[in-house]
Image (cartoon, rainbow, N blue to C red; front, side, top):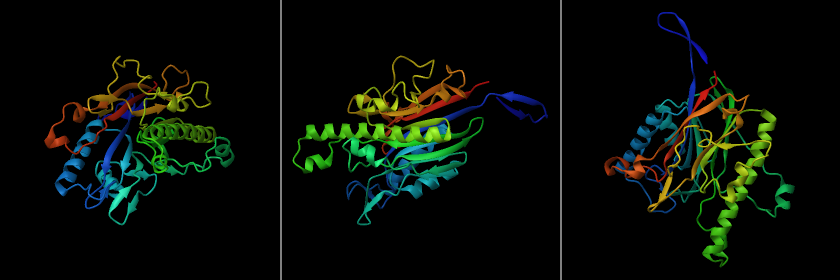
Length: 321
């Protein structure tokens, strides 16, 4: 509860809610630059349609903190979000620009209505990587860590992630390996990313003691063995899927991505016990999870042709009275 004063001067208590969202922007690269391939360039009209869709989608969801993936044009995104009221912004790195013409290796970003401070995650311990046989481990996309100072909660650590895709690992194919072996290697890479990330997040949480929100495009079902480290029971830091913390969740969970007619849940917001209403000392509980998927299920070509191939996931949390 927070205290506010009405126009008549009366003091009243109001319940405070906050919203967090995650969205894969799918090739957010402003023309004349390309993404992935030299000729994959939006026209000005297509770019206008894409950014207009994004503005409408964010305005409709109205999140307080927004986790974004597949960002190439960082400055253009920062300006767009500033115009929507998100004056605090961070990106994990600079995307790789090849020959001054086309982007590779998109980055993740986080925008907030409230002040944030960006952190650099420590490098994984070299001895630990050696023990795992990972002498040259790198995240396929650098995770982003920020602390956001939220009303009613205080400092809260957010981690924006985009784990390894399901596409076969290029290095395996280049060495003559089969597509099957390359795909397994991609899954293994994704699993190592999840496990090592959680080691780093847990260490940071033990140092700072802040509530934790970890979200983004995980590129797999959360029940997959490769993603098990993210929610493993008995860990010092126990994250839970926000959907599972929503007491009114319907039985059928909407997909967040479609490949042809097949839908998958790839996009998640995971929360620490601070947001579990069943925990006695929690700060808040999940009151709703909304999957914004109209552009996937019933697209309007005039509005949605250059939107995203992912749904936006939004969780609403209600602070405890």
